Amino acid sequence: MIVAAKSPVVVPSLLAGDLSRLGEHLDAVKAAGCRWISVDVMDGHFVPNLSFGPGFVKLAKARGFRVDAHLMVANPLEVAPWFADAGADIVTLHIEAVPDAPAALGKIRSLGVKAGLAAKPKTSVDGLVAAVERCDLVLVMTVEPGFGGQKFMPDMVPKIEALRQAVDSRRLDCWIQVDGGLNAANISQAAAAGADSLVAGSAVFAASDPAAAFRELELKARAAFGAKNKT
Ligand code: DX5
Image (tube, rainbow, N blue to C red):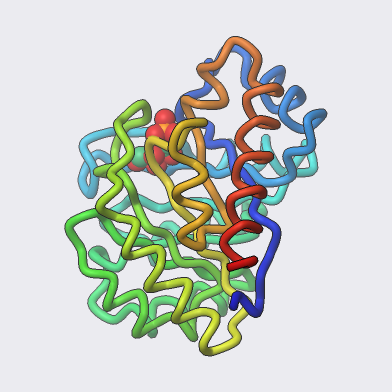
């Protein structure tokens, strides 16, 4: 039984957006009910790609969204203040990038923002479970981080289930986020496993109608999440 159940939300990520139409995309998904945007931050070291700086957090905050900054960087504690200052509501770091995750999460929270902890596909979920009481969000990557448009990795589903059990058994108020390759064909599987924050880039912003795509994904996620709780 899910205690601190939140109604699942779909969180579009800017990575897949047409940067020349970003404002239009954001306005479209906001009109469709979207209230949370994920900003993928990449440094070319932790992942083989470069992406967004704090300015993109400001852009999304200016439109009234909740924003999580997903730091795929080798020095998350150095850059976290930049994203907190830009208005990020949640700053998520990777467990692979810090020697002491609980201490790092405490440092993030000391910035006055909520703290998230992410794991790459090859990283065990054990570290996230061990630190879950220090987390406001845990993130299961369902692709190798670095690029949008990749294929969802269904063998990550047991990690989602393990975190759902860890959060519920401790009655924590902690989002369980999944990021990577989510689309209309697999989002129900992620939600049924217990994910309540579902990041979608290509499935939303590469769609011909991002607003309709957002609505479809969120309807599917909510139906699946609810279905699981009824069993
Ligand atoms: C990977 C990124 C992507 C992005 C979502 O590092 O984190 O997962 O947010 O992109 P899609 O939904 O296209 O996989």
